[in-house]
Every structure is written in C-alpha cells, then in structure tokens.
Image (cartoon, rainbow, N blue to C red; front, side, top):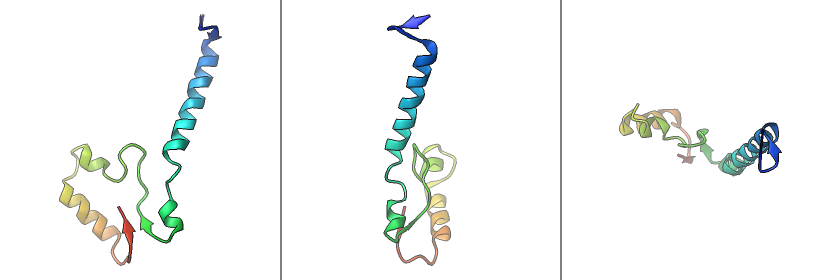
Length: 79
C-alpha cells in the first residue's frame, strides 16, 4: 500500500522526524533564563506552568500560592 509513491513505513518515519523537529522547535528556549541567573520552574510543553489551572484541577489562587511557596527566598523568578 502506498500513498503518493511512499509506503507506510516511510510515511511513519517522515511523521516521526517532523514530530521530533516540532518538539525541538517548541522547546528551543527552555532554560534560557536559568543561564542568565533567573530561577524558574520547568514548564510543560503545551500549557507551561499553568496546566492544572487551565484544566480546572486547581484554583488560580492556590496555584499562585504554591508557586510562592516553591520560590520563596529567590530574588528573581520567572513564572
């Protein structure tokens, strides 16, 4: 079975390659602020640090309080 002259295994390899390139493109700036001395929590790919709030699992104020407690004592932080 072929699509546009390529068989299924070739299409899967192309899809895998494009997925890896998209991931690398979307995460290319992760860690840039740590290199400059600004502490930040590691983000997730799609929602950053606000995933639980956007999914409705945690109230916004509880989420901010949790950030405050995790980052207590830091002079500069990036949320």
